[in-house]
Image 1 (cartoon, rainbow, N blue to C red):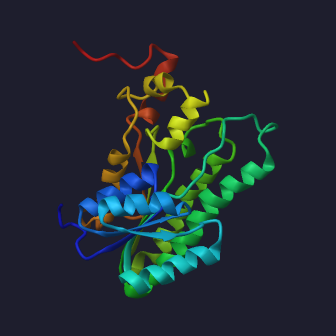
Image 2 (image 1 turned 60 degrees about the horizontal axis):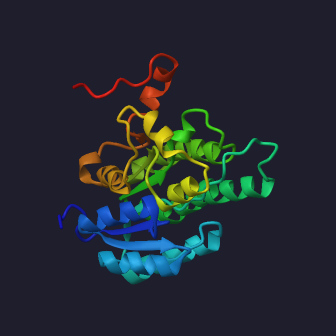
Length: 261
């Protein structure tokens, strides 16, 4: 275990699985006291136990629940200096006329509104203390057109939200950055593949590196943004996508070149 985050308290919403779990594990490896904040307490407690952290309940759809998390986390564990807003939900790729409005609303509520109220609950406290780092979780789907008519717009809004909050709290010592993961092997992706909603080979083919990402790789990037090595960085969107965006137009020509032999 390294000591880059020694004596720091970190909160990871959605930390019980997927990208959130990957981030939580990496921060714990860096010496942080990590709070796994999730709606699924059984999974949160299992992850917390495995990394020597703590589990706390939160429903990011409810502002009162998020505020309670912030109050209780600091009362029990001390000032929170790192927050990763990984709580989120997906929806199937459907034409807009077939996407239920209730589903559209739920994705906006969790992925955008939940990110905002989490940032505010912890950011306002960080600002008064004059220090802190927040990493929001956006997506490469915010950058290029995909048939996710609620998820992609929500993630695009998270990118812009990150910039506004970075400017709002910049002179108060709070850094706010976003990370945009590409196709990452998570339980959510595994479930989508099982339902036939995603094609692993297709996801691999359209990336420059020809593969999916691991949650550990996303965790490494988030840890960098939270570390002193990124002390001069705020308001950015760090794309970690194995070259998915870079290679997009190549498929209109001859595709991504194979490995040199």
